[in-house]
Length: 177
Length: 174
Image 1 (cartoon, each protein chain N blue to C red):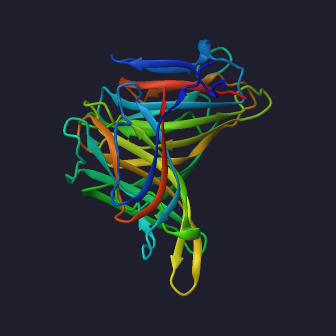
Image 2: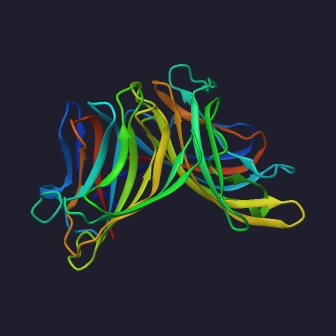
Image 3: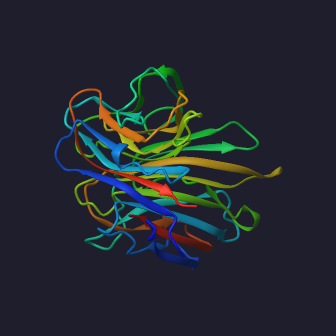
């Protein structure tokens, strides 16, 4: 029996800045699951966020307009939780957990709703688990629960990840048929 | 390799309906765990609430006061809050509106629906734009506190109708 979680694409990001994950959304699916893992950032990058932009299917370029809202709850192993919330920014911001290098290698999942539908906004939900580095006292686990929206009725074909020095990051994209 | 996420039933709403039954007569009791997916759910009337109820063995929705819920409300406009309630007659998903983009989206997992001697449990992950165009969503779950079979979920509005959306029920194959 055929599965309804259907593999679309895997991407191995290597030594890249702000990579674009292209041609992953289409009219074949309304909901997508994206998994990210094996993350190492460049030396000196500590507690970086994986901020996101959609890629406009018509222009093929990331949408940097001020139309992104996001909310992320960070659950820390060593401290009380923190709330990040933003409206009308140029990317989904500080939502999908921290990314680091070395043992801070993390993983997570992002669900994307209706990205290719030119008649609806694009919604995001997700969760991750990673490490948070605190200078002088080491690293601690931080888990995240996050949501976001791109408030433009347009068809989007992919995502851009806004981190300026990625050493490694593996991404797998599935459609939920 | 055989697939593991198996579509059981889907309803695509393109004209207004009073409710959507995911399961009921279309329920397949072969699975232990089910996934419910809904996207771009829009409403006919501003400021009406999208609800869910458990479908019973007779394929009707259970409206008895036996729904408890526990959620963390993530939102972009103000501080997050924890909310809980007991002995409700339904599970409240979101207050929705009719402005551009206002809609509900989410994935629920259903547990113990085929066990008549257990409660029906449900986890919820959502990403919604409410009736004031605020990004907001309850992350957590609800329980239907009756030992009885469940045959899926019914989605319905506090008043008026569901205008659009895609609702899909899956089983997780073993």
